[in-house]
Amino acid sequence: MITTIVSMLINVLYILIIARVIFSWVNVSPYHPTWGPLYRFVFEATEPMLAPIRRFMPPMGLDFSPIILLLLVRLLGSLIISVL
Image 1 (cartoon, rainbow, N blue to C red):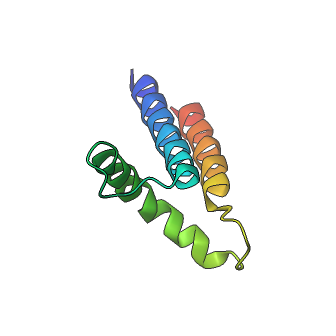
Image 2 (cartoon, rainbow, N blue to C red; image 1 turned 135 degrees about the vertical axis):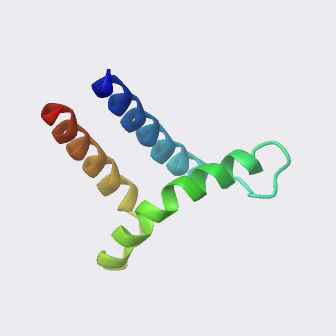
């Protein structure tokens, strides 16, 4: 039961990170009447995890912090589920 809940939370976080990347590709405006609220929710849910990663990365042309976060989420999720 607990492993199912943890697994679902990890999957939701994974989807939010991927949605954040897709929103950045299509340049969604946070003020758009339809997509704006969803964009703001995804941004506010993922930014606290992405910002610390960006601080440790050297400046590059592309932002690789979502890729690193996806890897960390999968790794930590696997570790947590294996312990439970």
